[in-house]
Structure formats: C-alpha cells, structure tokens
Amino acid sequence: MTKHKNLSIFVPHAGCPNQCSFCDQRSISGTQNPPSAQEVAALCNEFLPQENSADYEIAFFGGSFTAIDREYMTSLLSAAYPFVQNGRAAGIRISTRPDCISTEILDILKQYGVTSIELGAQSMQDEVLVANLRGHTEADVVKAAGLIKQYGFSLGLQMMTGLYGQKDYMEYALDTAHKFVDLKPDTVRIYPTVTLKNTLLEQKFLRGEYTPPTLEQTVEICAVLMGIFESSNIRIIKMGLHADTGLEDKIVAGPYHPAFRELCISRRCLERIKEQLTNAENNGYIIKVNPKELSQWKGQKNSNIKILADMGYAVQITADISVPKGQFTID
Ligand code: SF4
Image (cartoon, rainbow, N blue to C red; front, side):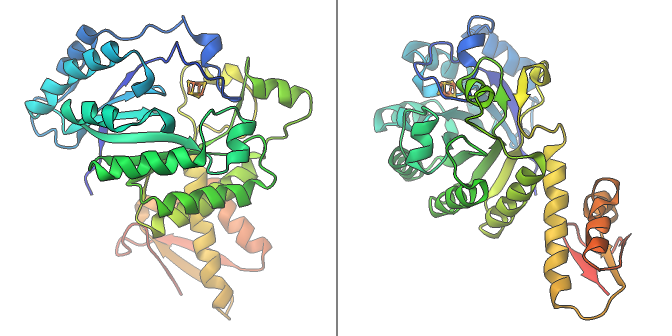
C-alpha cells in the first residue's frame, strides 16, 4: 500500500471562542505565528517533490481551519491549490470542528482542491461533550460527516480516550468507536487525553475531580479500538500525541508515552495470540512472525511472552520470512 505523506502546515487557532477542558490553546495563543499565504507557497515549493507526488497531501492542521477568518482561510487555500493543479500534491487536507461545516463552507473547500476533511469529534456522547465544554453535539458530528461524504471528500474522524466525565473509559471509547464505524470514515486518529498545564482539566485533576486512566489501561483500550477499526477497513493514521518540542514539559498527568502507537500495536498482537491460544489444547507453542515485526509481537522487553507465561502458556516467538507482515502462525 502506498504510504501517504503530509506536508504539514500549522495554523494556530488563536481566536478560538471555545475553551475545551483539555486544550491549552488559550494560554499559548500569541506565541505562535499564523503562516501567511506567501509562506505557504514557499513551503510547498521547497518541500513538495517536483514529480511523482501522488501520495503527498498539503495538510493544514492545528484545529479549526474552517472557523478561522474567511478571507485568511481562502488566502491559504489559494496559495496551496496551484500545487495540486500542477500535480506536485495529490490534494489538500484540513481539520476542523464538527459545528464548523456547512454546504457553503464545503463549496469553498471543493473549489480550492481540498480532498480530505478531518473532524475533531473527540466523543460521541453529548454528556461527555458538555462536560468538556466542546460546544458541539453528537448530532453535529453525524450531520457534518454525512455532508462531507455527500460532497465526495475523504472523511477523517478524531476521537479522544480517557476524557473527563466518562464513567467507564473502555465502555465510552467502544461506544464512540462503534458510532464512528457507522459513519464510514476513511481514516481515524485516536488521541489519549493528557492533562496539560493551564487547562480546566488541570484544575479538575488537582481538585481530585478527574482521575486519568493509567498508561496500561489506555494501551488496552486503544488495542481494542485498533481491532474495531481494522475489521471495518478504516485506516488509523495516528495514535497518541505528536511529541512536539516542549510537550513533555506541559504534561501534568495522563497516559503519555513517546512510543504510544508501538505499545498499542504490541498489545493488539498479544490479544490476537491470546484469541488463538484459548482454543488450543497443547502447551509449548511456537509462533512464527515476519522478521520485520518480531519485536512488536514479542512486546517491549519481551513483555508479551511474559504475560503469556503468567497465563500458563509457554510460548516462543520466532522470525520466519515466509510469514506475511501482519500475520502469524502457531504450531
Ligand atoms: S480544542 Fe477546543 S478550545 Fe482548543 S482550539 Fe480546538 S475548539 Fe478551540
């Protein structure tokens, strides 16, 4: 499968009228400079390949692209669109809030070569959206997702796990994931909630009103989510927070790990092995996997082998070039 690449351009949403519980945008607004149209054109010119760039997208990320000043938004799109027209990029990707999508906005995005739209849905339970001051509803997500698909854009949905107000972190994550599957997105991103300095969530955490899930619980939840999205052929393009410079200094609490996705992939491998062992009767198994994936099947520091041993299974995991990636055999 072709690996998609993004030329990412950060558009800070300094004027965001919302104040989501977990977001520190307000405290950092003013410290990030929004790019000018000229800068966007220069970046595209410098970093996009001259040819064969069908797998490249110009990605405006940073939150709510369609909620920024309209004239500014179209100036950025006007700067990027010529690179789609001349074939140096396959399209333009943007992310925005579910309540900032309308037919009028979609008409504009279509006109300027936007191909993919990601919605920051975060949760599909109104009570959780309200508790985190998101300012939109589950119905907004459903409506926006439907319109985006109707217009023929690629649809991306972003969700968060471990949000404040979720009575059972696993149950709420599964509910959101199943509702996502019903909306038939092309891609999803999964972000574990991390408590950042200068946020409402930090206050709740310090007052003891919010107890984030542990890293272990979050890895377990996300491994299950991976299975749900994989079985529905929905591509997961991100799991875990992007390790920005300075991010770790801003974290007060929560399940942050720089190699979060790898931890989840390993856990998913473990679950897949466990499903097979449950039905097997003998002991002393040899599991063969593709050499490129050996470490993820074994787990960090052989953790998967140790967990299986604790469950009473003596397992060896070995590399075998004849096993296709993503698969395994058990003898
Ligand atoms: S997360 Fe919420 S507060 Fe932060 S930029 Fe997005 S909409 Fe605004």
